[in-house]
Amino acid sequence: MSGSTYRRSALITALVGQCCVLVLWTLLVMASSGEAVVLSNDCLPGWLKAPSSGTCVRFFEYPQHFRPSYNEYYIGLHDTNTEITWRWLNETETATYTNWAPHQPNNYKFHLRKYGQDCVELWHWMGYWNDEWCDVQQPYICERPPSSAAPGECESEWFKNPSSGTCKRWYAERKSWKDAKAFCRQQGGDLVTILDGQTNKFVDELRTSEKGGTCWIGLNDLSKEGEFVWPNNQKVTYKNWDVDPRKTNRNEKDCVVMGYRGTEKWSLFYCKEESSFICEKKGVCPTVDGVCPSGWSKGVSSCFKMYELRRDWKEARAVCQKDGGDLLTIRDECMTHHLEAKVKDGPYWIGLSDQKAEGRWKWLDESFMIVYKNWGPGQPSNHQTAGHKEGQDCAEIGSQKFKTQWNDADCTIAHKFICERPARPPLKVGAEVIVGIIIAVVAVCGAIIAAIIFGPRLYRSIRQETTSNANTTMSFNNPMAASVQNT
Image 1 (cartoon, rainbow, N blue to C red):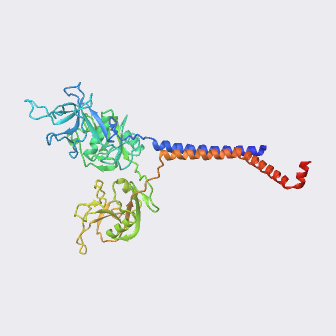
Image 2 (cartoon, rainbow, N blue to C red; image 1 turned 90 degrees about the vertical axis):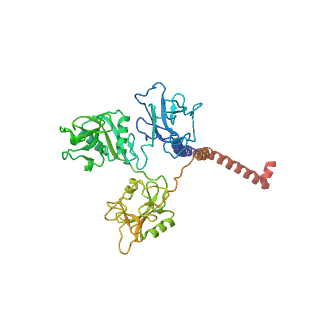
Image 3 (spheres, rainbow, N blue to C red; image 1 turned 180 degrees about the vertical axis):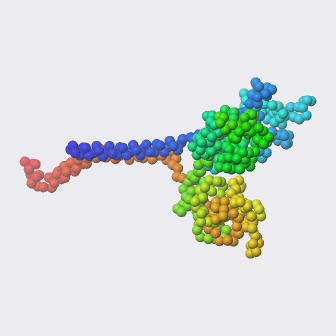
């Protein structure tokens, strides 16, 4: 092999080797990412993720229970409704799995107690269950759903409030109210707003699961004395004062904390005082993990498509069904966010109606209960006209008056409409397939490299042998060559 040929072969071999290494590295990354386990941070601080149920649990120690050394914890099993019929607290599920201690439950009674043992405790040191009198004071174990339930996803160390759908985070650093508010705005949010009891409980759990103590909330009357508002001038619809501010000496206390007296109640505080605080912001809306057909857009849990042709509600549904779907179900605020820029030229029919029973609005997907509601002010009104006495039984979105809020309308009106259909599952390659591809790539790359290195030698050897055989054959066929060989 000449020098130039050798250099070309070496260069080609190196390039092929680099390509093979790159392909193998990509496949290995795919394999490792497919098998990785992601631990989600969806339980509040102090709560533990239960591996089997996926819920969050927490052990609460009662400070004055009368048997501190036993470490017995109440769980949510009882037979208070029907003796010996043990049910969990949701009242719909009878205990199918049990782990009673030997000779339990025994419903032990004696003359000082009118009732038997109708509640259940967990013996911490053994893991067995025992029935116990329900009025005994002792520790207990609570359970709650993960805090990062849809809609929206929260960043690390932010926790989803199921009631409001927003993300919240407790900050230990002590700041004045105005500095805390400015810090929250830098994070893309504001000091927390509390509009209902569920949110108040969630905020208190977030506060107590960390260090406890006081924390700033967004309520204040800095703009006008005595008129308390939340951030963005949102009005107060829920109150939880420890002392009514109208019955106390204000002394320029214009800001509000939670936890001043160790409870979830609100207290007036000097705004210049420093305290920990809780910020709140919207989560990042997810999109469906799948593939949508051409012309369809990704929503939160499905693919959706805006149809510009006009049909009445029933005809619009027929078009959707012909295309493999149905009229759109809006399950949460995130889906409204996906539609915000697309429904400006509405209105569009959606899959919500009360045609089966007046006033009972249901989605076409009847397995989905209406939890999220987004009616416009005063809607649904069931407005009746002379020509349409049956009223308004179908829902629309994108009207000039209500924008992304819902409005009830006459089902026979020809509107544009929005369809949805399931997304196709994304292509996921299993580990076994990836291993097979790796072996095939190694074999092909090895064959190419071997051909580059040994191919020229083999080619010359075959060519020389072919030439030699040809010369031998020609010599036997030539009489003059044969006579020369004989002499």
